[in-house]
Every structure is written in structure tokens, then in C-alpha cells.
Image (cartoon, rainbow, N blue to C red; front, top):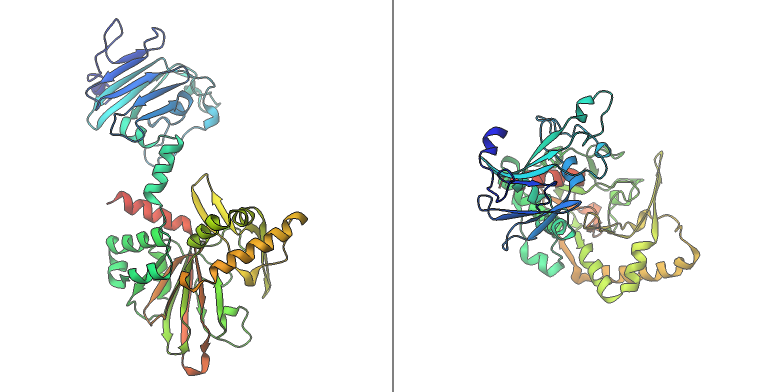
Length: 430
């Protein structure tokens, strides 16, 4: 294939062979009318590629060490499992290619990069690495790998850009997915995934009222996350309850399993029976609340991003304990996470000068959370399944009269990684 591709090299003037940039001759730039007017400029430590005025970003930079490390050939990337066959630490320091050519193949333009011998450090079982090497890099693939902050941000926002909501906004939507469409088609699953991606909340309607159906729904997203509550668990009023959720009392807004090092990303609550008086389900977008806090009370917002809260669970033969701030802004992955579960807060462990600011900030945050305009309330009916992002959407329940009828929900968890995996795969299939 490489021999066929080299026939389409871009013609350059001078003594250099067709389409080649030679480091020794000091020629820096070439143009390709074949390759969609791509312009490649060779620098001392990297190349710059001008993609054209309509592209965003219009220019990308790729270091030589990065290009060698990310060679896509079968010697560097296993052809069937797509796993790297070397480590980033194997790349020779201060590496520079001998030449770079742009070639036109059947699947579009490629860069052909010739590396000198020793571009990867040899190991006892990989002595062939000391030989010269040629990388053939798909230009379209390369453009998608731009690692500039602007490009990374655009890729993140293209897939994950949450829409903040209050009770009125969500009430106007009232979008749900029919169970049969969801369970039997990629389109139905995609609709649920997109609702969760954008709003962190999704409703599945008219599911069969079977005891384990919540697990079938959960497995559409990924593997069920089993905890000490089981694979799935019952939510109903019982005597001597080990959790306030298993009573008929008012259940304040909270998130589940904040005392885990990695709390589940998705929670499922599936209604089997609901004939009681009261017991409305309550939901609130914590990202909206954080946005209000950050805008109106920036000092309190900063405190809640810095002071770790202790979460613990000491009951029924278990002792869970983890500390994390209420608000986590993950700049590296450009995502926000909120951790809020007052019933499971342990004694605060913070530096003395941060204790009073924390209580002030936490009270201000809860003042925002108590605004009824932010909440969306609904009464789940048999066959309804609500799914929500456990580190975004707070959930609660109004008090109900246990003597007035039956209320029985089933719950389950799925990890956020499984959700993102499924979302990316279905997004590619569009």
C-alpha cells in the first residue's frame, strides 16, 4: 500500500524528491492541492499544519516525539486490538524525522514520516526497534488529535455540554422515552443518553412491572454496579430501617454513596407500585445551583471547591469513609461534579481557619437549594423509571402515608464510564 501511495506525492520545486521535506536541505514548507490545501511547516521540534480558513482551529502543532509515539502502523499499534506496542518512555529524546512527505492514498491524504534508526529505544525482546522506521499517518485522524487547549475544549463541548435547568424549564420539556423504543433500538437508547448528557435526568415510560426490570434497563447503559445494597435494591417503608430512604419520612435532597471513593455515575429508580398518599419524587439540577452560587457569592463558591467534606457510612457491618469538596471543577477533563449528602456527612476535618468560612458557604449553598423554583416534582407511576446523573442531579422524596397504600421502587446503579462509553459509540454510529 505504501508503494501505491508514494506515487501520489506532492511535487516540490528544487532538487528534493517529490513531495518531501528534507531536514538536511533546510526546506521548511510545502503545499498540497491534492490534500485539501493543507500546508505543513517544519520547525525545530515540531510541525505546524495549516488546515485552511474554514477549519477550527485553523492551525495545529504536533511535536516530533508525539508523532513518533503515536505512530499507527502495525509495528507500533496492534492491528486487531489497537493497543500500543511500546511505551511513551521508549521514544528517543530530541528525536527528529529525516523527512516528511504528504501522500495521497485511497482513503485520503497521509503524512509519511521517515525516522532515523534508534527512534525507539531497543529492549532485550525488541531489538528490531533500533532500525529506521516509517510512520504513515492519516491526516484526517491527525486533525482530530490536535492537543491544543482550544481543540481539546471543542471536542469536550461537542459531546458534553450540560444544559442547566430549573423546575419551570424542565416542566416545559417533560420529555420521556417509551420503554419499547428504548429497549429495542439504538435510536431509543440514544435519546435517553442525550437527555442524560444534556440534562442529567431522563424518564422511561410504560416498562413492564417486573421485579428485576430495573436491571434490564440499567444494562442498556452498561454493567450494573453492585454494592453492599445488592445488584438492585428495594425502596419501600420497612421497620427498623438501616437507611432513611426505607422509611415513609420526608427524604431531603441528596446524592447516593458519596462515601465511596468512586460513587456511581447513574442511578435508576423504577416504580413497581405507588398507591400511597404523598411520596412525590423531587429533583434539582445542582449545576444550576452551583452556577447561581458562583455568580452571586464567588467567595463562598471558592470555599466549597477547596474544603473537603467527610462522608461516611457506619452501619450493618460496614464502615465507609471518604473526603472530597462539595464542588469539584475538573479542569483537566472539563467537567463539574457535585457531592452532597447531608445524612452521611461525618465530622468536618479542615484547617481551623477554614471551618467558619465552610459553614457560612455551605449554608449559602443550601439556601439556594431550598428555592422551590429550582425543583422539579412528579409522582412516579407503575412502569416509570427515572434515571439521573448521581453527581449532578439531587433527588429526594416527599413524606407519604404508608398506611394509605403500597409504594415500592427498585433501584440500581451504573458507572459513569459505562454511560460515556455507550454515548461515544452511538455518537460515532450517527
